[in-house]
Image 1 (cartoon, rainbow, N blue to C red):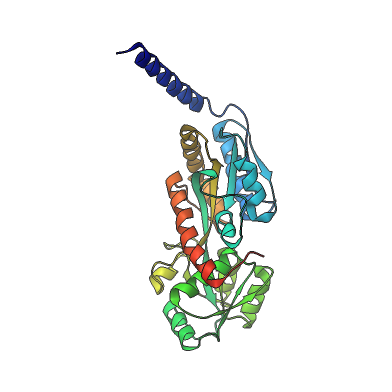
Image 2 (cartoon, rainbow, N blue to C red):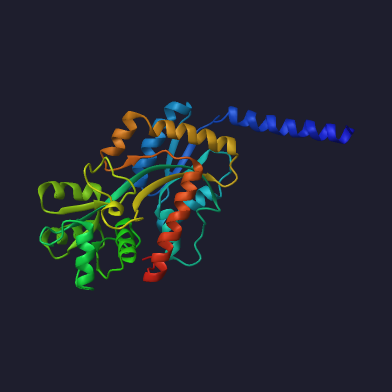
Length: 321
């Protein structure tokens, strides 16, 4: 063996040892989790996870709120941070959906970040006014096909999960249902309950009380699998539209070149936190289910939603407000 090969071998071993040592000593200082403005699902999720991580990592985990531009400011903050695992991003799937509705997005969710875990998910409920003569997803699709353009649905801001859930449903079912736009979901709920709007892909927290009171009829849940949040309610996919899936999800990311060993450690610690009974209960009480996926599963979810919703957005000509 040549002297040069021996030196190269020692150099590689030294680099490997240094990388392992770095991961073993992580974290050696406080971490920050960057997310959206205070209030809302992003902030709640970031604070709940960070509080639990502070105890398990034995380092303070601080939440930093960066509002505005549907995640662009928060995303750019983390993308430009040192790739050492001390600056993380917690954001909903608007992070990778909103750029599909804009030209020249300032960041790319797959190229600028290292995925850590799909942290949590909240499905929508397909609800209708009780006067609508449908009892199932199949009934609704049949009625819409028999009366194209005669039915309407309520939705808040453009690009929100309730909006895109409805547009995905329309595209896959091949139906024409007219959108009635609202600044927020509250106005849509009021008009749906009064019968001025006929259907909605509502949030679980917002719609469940009205379903229990009988003011709205629930047909299905939009998640791929039945949800514990809505026991006994079938999925849209199982009830008449195979392959359908939509939900508001929350992912955790690090800057792109963060060492794999640190990403793996963060994944392990965050998933451990998400599986804690007290954390699961706090999420559940707000209409959210914890997940705790692998980095690859989060990347696959982003890719899948980008492809399916990107097609819907292009075909419907949807542009961000």
